[in-house]
Length: 316
Image (cartoon, rainbow, N blue to C red; front, side, top):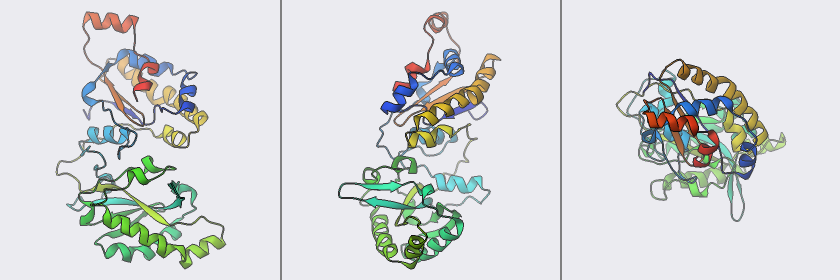
């Protein structure tokens, strides 16, 4: 499947009322024409729940790459290292995102890490503070980006973790790691909250009017499989930020641009006779479509009752 042009679109639709209202008045002519030419592919479509650890586009991407697609167990951090040209190894890796938990009596909301004002200097300083605590549990931390570190350790080898997309701006409790396997992480999160509450690092940020960083989120854990990953499909992320923040006007603008760009290009390839694949993902499910031979009855049905995005969106 790696040699077939594959366009994988995350956050193509949402059950949100705002999204549904936006979709009712959102013309996507190239997408509708493309869907009319393609055939549904149940073998590469997946249904799920909004509370699953892995978002539908992550499961679809894992399947396309040949990576483990079990819920919450795709080794994204190990795969990322491979993409950076770092040597593959048998170690279990994970992403660790420093963040702020806003704790109330009935919610623990994870604030968007990108809004915390964490630059490289602050991130490295914070990593130096917390790394010894992780090391005591056999986890080694490495700096990667201001709002994301890499972690390595045996604890991460068999740990289901929820995607950051699942918990961003939401109550994290439904997506906490299993109480048994994640016990160490739960303890570390509690220790970090106590450590950072009165730490000089926090006081210095407060003096500058910057938000507190008081916790972390672990995601993308596990070791790479022995089989090398396949080529990744094209996966534009333009819809993600708007959808996660329920900015449906921005989401509509992003969809219009996608329809005129990558979708129109895939349609052009299909019209020229190339085999193509399109995967549309929402917050629960993914639906895949591809070019496939059609019998006479199928061609007649496709002509008079073509598939439209308005039919597909509620299935996502």
